[in-house]
Image (cartoon, rainbow, N blue to C red; front, side, top):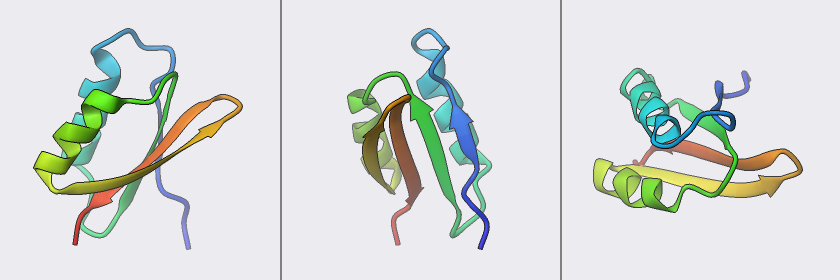
Length: 73
């Protein structure tokens, strides 16, 4: 099993991290998951993801907030 693609947007200024995540989701194959590494927890993104039909889980790591996103089934 392959690891999901990792999008590291920690160094980008707002609103680029959100824009990059949404762009990557546009190209995410059905059934796939996208992992995103951010400098902070993306609370505004969660509402957008819910409206778009995605689910997510997040966890803090030493190097940032890791959010895994997939289409809700």
